[in-house]
Image 1 (spheres, rainbow, N blue to C red):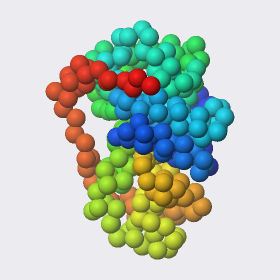
Image 2 (cartoon, one colour):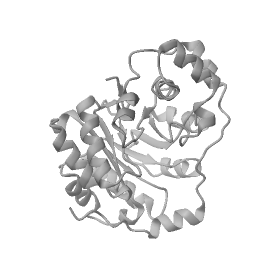
Image 3 (spheres, rainbow, N blue to C red):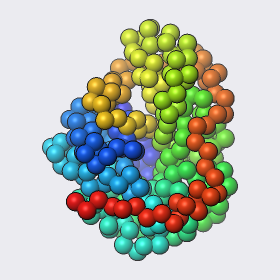
Image 4 (cartoon, helix red, strand yellow):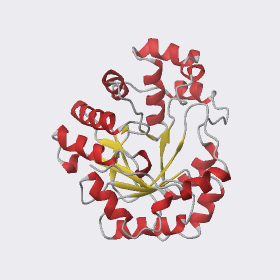
Length: 280
């Protein structure tokens, strides 16, 4: 495994298993098998409604808790719930997480961020982060934070490298964790000739080349899958290094083109929606 050092000197693996859109059963299985393969970063969220399953998967893997970097996110409906962090930890079956985010810039997100800061101070969160706080939202947060976050989670891939956002993050040594790392499975991205050429050179798939690009960009990356073979392939990217020239060739693909477009109405809906958390 390769690691990055965060602005609070915590070390985080560069690649992990994501659980977005995985059912509890699939999340439990994927997390268990991923850790057995050598993964040590696991990402989930209140909104994925699989935190209990993720906790079970970690335990079933046989890994010591200290060997797993566990990341989750508070949903906007929980920002003003004073028990939100403890309830999240209870679902995960742990007394701390390695990284705790607020998930969306919706509702009373400042109250949510204050919850992160409190959890960080009392040891329930070893690191804190913000998810989807791009543009004006991170500008507003900069004026309010007491503790600088360690991570931003946002859409990023070779068609959308987050160049403007990275300039802001670099000023504070905030790391980026990318979602939609393969362009939401867009075949036009994965089939770009540069990835086929590099895949042939290194004996890798196009997807593996893209995931390696993420880690060499300095991003943490969390591809998710219920397919054990895909999970294994996604981890098999640390035995080669793209050259500076190859990274420059991939940089030419940047179109500033994202796949997910959030609206103000969606943010209002996010603030009102409360996940129906797993009962067991």
